[in-house]
Every structure is written in structure tokens, then in C-alpha cells.
Image (cartoon, rainbow, N blue to C red; front, side):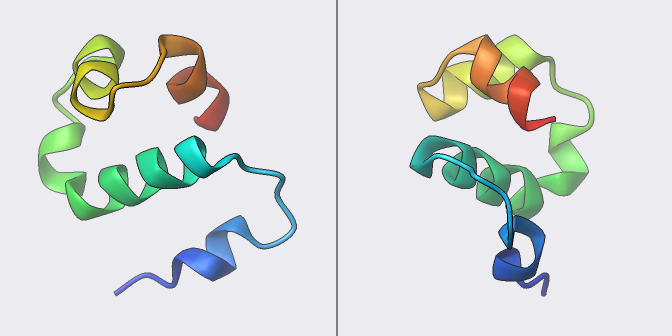
Length: 54
């Protein structure tokens, strides 16, 4: 399992960005085939949040 704390250490991520990152890690196999809009819809956030995170 990936230690999320090591990924976000030293980054100024919002709570929503951390949530989306956890979602991506948890669903890595399926998220690669999804569009940004699909990820946004499933996480109740904005496209700019996902783009900024990437």
C-alpha cells in the first residue's frame, strides 16, 4: 500500500485534493480510462481541482 503521507509531504494540498488523490490511488486500475469530468463527478469537485492535482 502506498503511504499517502509520503506523497503529500511538503505539498500544500487542500483537503479536497487529498481526497481526490486517495480516490485515484484506490481506483488506479479504472481511473486511467476515465475522463477528468468523470473523476470530478464521482468526487463532487471541480475540474480545476483535478487538473491542479495532476
